[in-house]
Image (cartoon, rainbow, N blue to C red; front, side, top):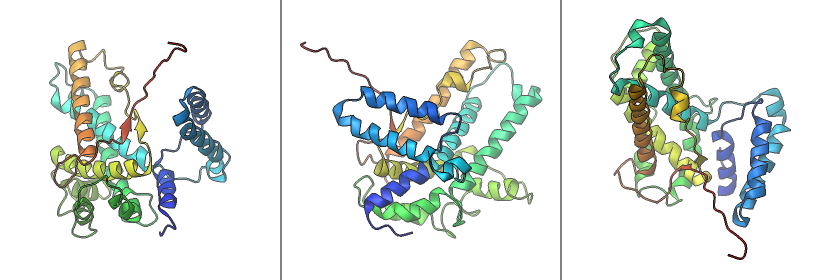
Length: 290
């Protein structure tokens, strides 16, 4: 796909990366955006007005009404990270009880989470032109990202070589995770070995590509990850308070890894700009006449 201007490319990028809000939640989100607009500083009002307009336009579109839309790339990336962070925490914390061996429910949760991770990996790096994949989108907009000043001098070329369709990272020969996905998840062909650290190498590349696109096309995502209390809620009868504290800590450690990958040149490890794809709300109070 060719774009007439960079703004056209940026608007298209926001459209394909943004998570589509569930119909049950969209009106609540619209009310939230309107409240942010009402309380925003003058320099931020334009942004929130645009967000309100965009959401209202989406609610009234035939695509939304008929649900003729794919999952956003943001949603796929964040779910991949969420699942991996939770499993990482359980891998790093020794607990008195091992429910994954003792209880079928927990064993099924682990199997289901593992399958979900590899399904998401396949969706994000899919070569099929019909798919709304990170790979396809990168091919469309990476030339604009290269001119943005957000990346290392030769980082785009480095990423493109890693994304080569037949000789790049996401092949059976160069990725344990992709081989496992292709041989075990997509097909019942064989049972190759897979180390989780090898999967993390793939997540690092995905995170950096996604981060560059997000920083180029938008202000970033506001506090996108679930609160740790929600992630481990319901496990109080299985794990001790100290074990849950350690699980939260290790999950946070993995999310910190991801945030590091997102903000560092994948070729050199250097920080190119003082920006991040992640943001948070801040509130300031001023008193008239003071």
